[in-house]
Amino acid sequence: MNWDAYPESTALPELLKLQNGSPVKTPEDWMKRRRPELQELIQREMFGYLPAPQPFTATVTKTVPDALAGKATLKEIRLKFTQLPPEAPEIRLALWIPNRHPAGKIPVFLTLNYCGNANVTTDPHTTIHTDRFCSKKEWIGQRGGQADFWCVEQVIDRGYALATYHESDTKADKNEWNDGLFPYLKSNQVPAGSQPATIALWAWGLLRCVDQLAQEPQLDPWRICLLGHSRRGKTVLFAAAMDERIALVVPHQSGTGGMALSRENNQETVERINRVFPHWFCGEFKKFGGNEPRIPFDQHAVASLVAPRLLLDTEGDQDAWANFPRSLETLQAVNPVWKLLGKTGLVGSGLITSVTEIQPGKVGELLQLRLPEKHTLTKEFWTGILNYADLMLPE
Ligand code: GCU
Image (tube, rainbow, N blue to C red; front, top):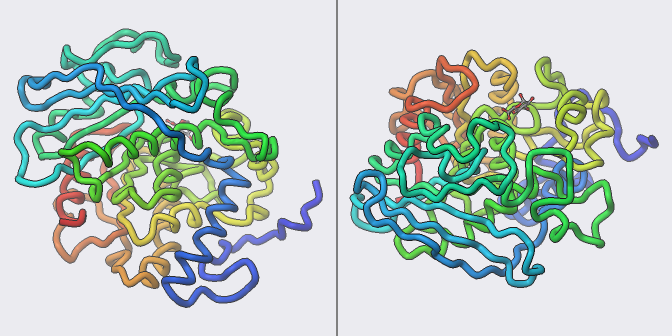
């Protein structure tokens, strides 16, 4: 490997400096020049290039006006990509819209689920699909395996819609490349080492769901929020970095390759994540295993691309593997970008440890909410996330 183009730096690469060495002084310098440079870098060297959007037809395959015991209307929508061959997989989106909500357009949380939409809630109306890959065998064909995790009723009761699709609609979570949408979305224009890997394909699917949600008459296109857990937390951070339509991103316990810095990461190293999950990041990223100081960016560069929007990093203090201290450092490292764009950014250190601390003036666009929890999503996390969304999303 010739490392000439990758000088070693144990310090975090500077965000507010263009590749040609000029300082980034104005919001325009950031949005028009530095942001595109960083988007190019993280795609080429880490995630692979996000494929271009594809036109699709959206067919509502089911509408249930009294889903969730009458609390929500369930809409199941199939996104069929009209310029791909007919056998290319469709994305099956499930959307629960609250039947009771404050006047006006409804904000929405979009998530990526592990094992099919019916796994998200015990509600009997959601269609069960068993034709896609799911690594948890016990969840296949079963309803509500993760109902306590997604807390759909709680989200609905708070006046938010919830939308979700199964990751395997776009790419199964395994190191095989002949299923899902990869065969149709890989591009001859892109070098092999920068083809979109699994996380980029999952993110692409989320962004196509955003295309659809932005058209839903009841939903507010200015209050589309993305939430993902762990490997899917890495995914939503990348998606929000690439697309300004996301108003709030919650990379929940996203760890290495997400909010946690790769340099001096004493939990999951880049070498380990590439070895155990070789399909998450593109081929180019492999060379950085054991060579972290040569990465020409770090995870703060990915997070910085969310500016000036809302970035809520939720962590559990019993989830050391996700490296929440190194994630808090990411928030601190990106704060100058929010400031440059005229925002508050962090208030104080940016860390709170109780949902009751989410109060006007006490939190900014950048926040780590660290609760006494393990590697999971709970009602209490949702309370914090929804309180933060109530307080911080645009009116
Ligand atoms: C593994 C992996 C993490 C990942 C996690 C998850 O623990 O090492 O990087 O975030 O799985 O997705 O739950």
